[in-house]
Image (cartoon, rainbow, N blue to C red; front, side):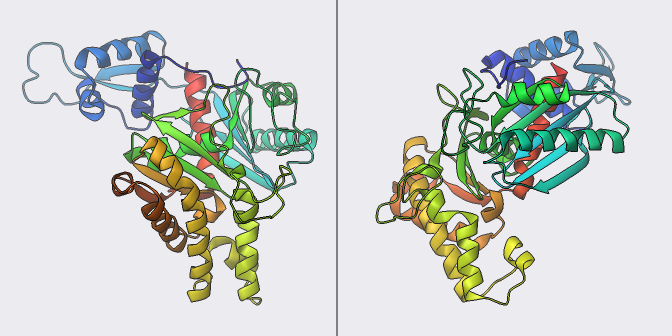
Length: 385
């Protein structure tokens, strides 16, 4: 298994898209797949034949024949072939590790989360992830995991599988996280940038279901983005697309983890925004600060200004890419309407009017679980190939 997700052909993407539609339903007929995708009957039939030949799906006669089915070949319903194996996902945040064990369809059966400084101790973080997965396997009596997908909060070179930035993830640079995790777990591993997995989670199970082209923004301790074009994440020539957190903001001098000053994530990390709210409400409970339950004019203004700062950067991307939507995830995304309204106002002001008019700004439906859901969905698809 390669260290990172490889580019796939249009034919393979069509097959995998149909597989995911079948996997997330109670079973579909070929005619229903044609209706759901808008693809031609011949394209659907060709992809279905390949799925059947690969043993990824099975078909059985419908319990009841529809009108007009009295002659000719009876309609059949396609379902995912039953498997006993499990898959796993890991979300490495800058300050947490989130591990889940799932069945072959990507549905979680158990989860573990721990707070840890991931940036400064790569070996320790991967040891902890492996231990958490082993614990989940024991708790749920799972002997074998067939695929693991992990997300990391920094640049990953898809050509080499190595972490590239010596400043964002200082202790990870030069490492192949896929090889390191495989050595610790004995499981085939695919590693992605965490924002790419967040976008994929929203694409398959969240707000991204409704769009062909969208930007996903993970705004937490760092800020990253993933570009989805034609319902497929765009990674760039070496997998480094979407590093918007280190966009320089004029007039700002805050020190960033990358060593520069005035980067977007130094100005707008979740810690920075929470500290502003905490300063305005010194008696607020920490949990209320974390999930956005503090709601008053001062807090809404703080969040609106944060949204406008982020939206100013996103407006340039919208001018370039003309997406249907911006999907805002991560811990900042939990703050909801005031933040989104600020983003919307900045995009309306700075993007071309026609581009802004065609755009929706929405919260991630999966919240802070988007990256882990994306990891599990990617693992389920990879394991079924």
